[in-house]
Length: 247
Image 1: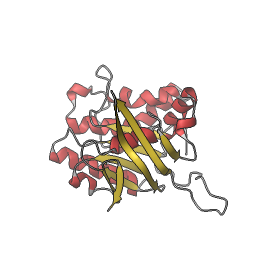
Image 2: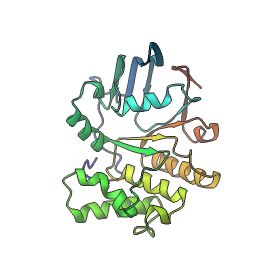
Image 3: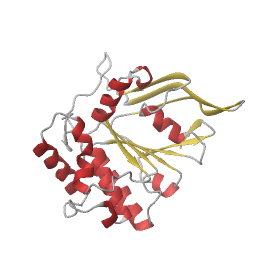
Image 4: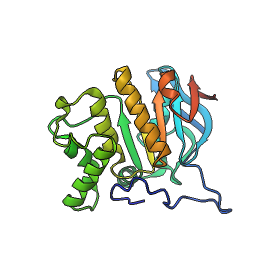
């Protein structure tokens, strides 16, 4: 993997292996618990869950609001810390990392797609996609080339100079996906990526995620409450009141 920029399609990257040569899961959760305190009450968002996700999988975390699916995604990304249990991601425990190291680890290994797109309104598509690369050592010319490659991959090579206000919702989300993959991350995290889209645009985004998974070997974890969106994944993990029920 080229940690400083896009190398989509390189599937021979080094993978963490156990002593016996077995490829380790990209995510391992063991008795993972997350509690939140609200006044005098304790809310259990995740309740001693154990699961694993292997490299190259497209997994949908599905469940109603409050089931714990977004909490799990935030823990995987190191945006929050578990109350108890262990969570190993790419051979590291995000909960044990210092903030600076955690930020560098995220930028090198994780890509994020959000329901609200989170594009910068005053930047055009190319500039939005280039943003994560500004935290790398790549020169400006290479950053622009990589960002252009990512936008071509999501079908927006003719929209490089368009601002978010000039794009449809589906196009905005594809720009967001290009931004998420431009660093060639090991793991793509998508939180309700079709939640703000019409049916046609949602289908296009799901098709793109499937292509990234099947053709380019990207590991994807997608949070959704929509059965149709979840069906695009290779495996569905159902959450209910903080516990896993695999289907």
